[in-house]
Length: 556
Image (cartoon, rainbow, N blue to C red; front, side, top):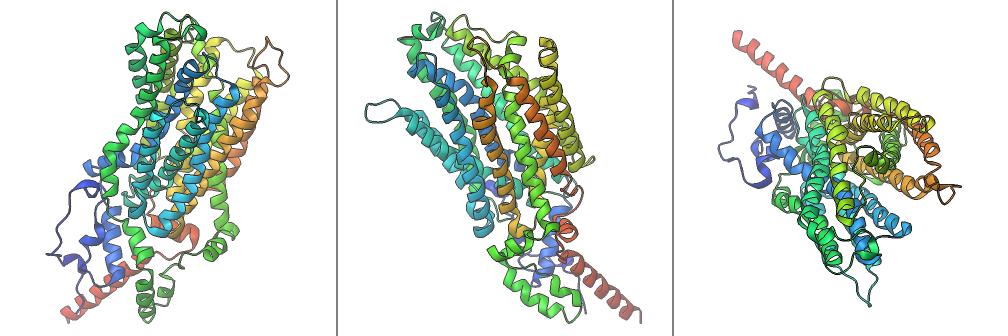
């Protein structure tokens, strides 16, 4: 007599509501009493996929989003921090090569972290790796704040090395937070949850601006008397030395709060069921084949380098990875392109003061804070509101299309635009960057790949984006002064913006390689786009058939 396992209660299981398990629950433990691994898998995944949106999902967003808050906070902090460092070590004028080195080293570390942590999460498991990247970020940040000048060391070399290490931690957070959020999220709101996790980037920029304003205002009396870098001595120099340490160091505070929760999450049920129990599922599949021939295809191939190349070496699967990686590369090139115009925009809105050291630092912090609130944050929120109804692919196409048009306007009509016109184009571009590819390039790789390679593929896609940022900063960014006279700085900027518009146009092409994933379970996505049988449907159909057979026997 067949009995549905939904009615069996595990009396020995007691839900653990401590630490990270309050958000990332132990679904494996909850259904551990189910002997049939296929049925256990079906019950666990159905419970995840059919959840609503509540406090559990909010906690999930907060725990997973901390890394992105730290990432964007650091980008904001280092931009202002380099100005403070210039007063401490270079009398207000840091060499351009040193500025580029300090900023690029973080991106180099991020590439290493994205690939390394991405592969590790697929090899060792999500739980064993999650939290380690936050430890790296916290330790590197603390060491950065402690380093100082000495005849025995080169400050820039040590500082840049620590920023590479911090970048490794930041990079690791991209694939881990994306795939863990994806694998624990309800199908109906998975896109919104992942977009909300990523929107912590905007909150990080907001937090960075607020901390910068508070810190600079607190040291006002020590800064206001110095009208130029050479006059910033004594208490002004000491104030700047303390400010950059406080500003950068504060970035690890949210990470310290969230670390315990990350270290105590449950293992992803999808990883545990699809990868850890692979051999068990293979045995069950062989037995199930006697009932249904298609059961041979229940279990996906075991993860290996050979299988990875064999799978993505086929165009129908490889084009998806090319689409996610290529789109992220194109996006990050333009992200830097918009930043080239920040100084001009700050001058337009009246926040480019330079009467003294205090005014320069304070206006820069407040001005960037205004720009974040005007364009970036609304873009993130628009994505959260629409990504599960409009879809990922349409939003990404819209974003790339609008950025292509806006960067063309910026480049070809640069000298004809009024200051107000430049401000308008800049804010609209910021909006469509975040209500567009900046959010969707994070979401799609966390959904569209098979469980055994989901983290690796996301890491490769994200790393491709950071490579684009490095190329933009080290190669394209230097073209702004190509052939310029001494009194005509940035004369080639319009042409550089035109080049960035071309990259956005190419982003439209890479987006066409990506499939739509809205309102589909991760198993349905794998079945449709990677040719892997959705075992949950097979098991559900089997139990339904058994129930019908049992009911017929009862009636007779």
